[in-house]
Image (cartoon, rainbow, N blue to C red):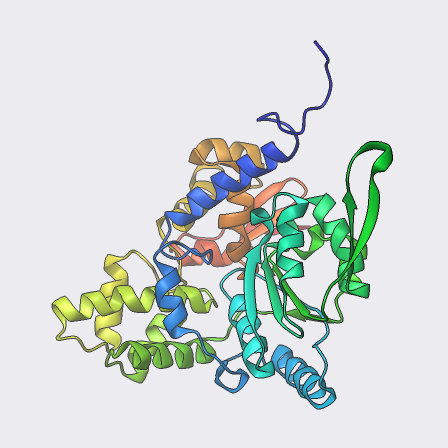
Length: 366
């Protein structure tokens, strides 16, 4: 039997990557405060999604760059330069892609990296594009490398080479692709190759939202859904939304349910706090999994440092899920510090649980 590396073996190659991605998605889907998309979000998000740039709240830097590029493309009557949107999930990358098409008054087609498996999939989509149309590719970092290479000439020269026939009679045929705007989104820009990144003329990083921006989003979404809400109620939901509109809208829907059953259908601060207490989402937007992770570091390992392997075993979670689902937000707001020796709970984490902060822990950050 031939031996060697098998890219489709369950524990090697791409299959291993997909298995890890699957476990991360499963862990994420169980959480109310996940920034990733879950099934119930799709229909509601479509209703709440703004359709024009003027309606889009937040991301002022990205909006300013995009507004100039859109106006210039419209005045020249050309397709917009290719756009790469990157940043954490749930911040509005898909929404911005649809806005680009709406602002240019052109067609919009959407697909994703994992959905494109063979060259024929990509060829079929590209050859059916209309002139100046927007093609949106989500999760571009999960695209097959061989398909990524085919995109190079398409994005630069609007041409695609295909091979017709087999063996000595095979010949190369060049397909002309109509000029279009390619909009790609990724949560992991570091996984994109340099040749692919260089094909994008506009690179926009989306940042986490402020509480005020999220309050505006909650108020707008409540208006669209027909839910009475006051400023304080919207602020309470915004404060617990982890800087992410998708989470804010999901929490709004759950609070709406509580208000309808227990509070006459109106959301104020007291109603929002009562609903979110039942949902176990605290003032920082932490859920039970976040609190369990922090308490494990503090109580079981004296605040750290503790290695990722050990932490994953103690929590009965996958390492990938800890590193890519749970940790990023806790690190971003300063509750966990990642060091070469392992994870450390910071002073903020101790204060959150009302536990005295040991002075010795300060030396661990050095």
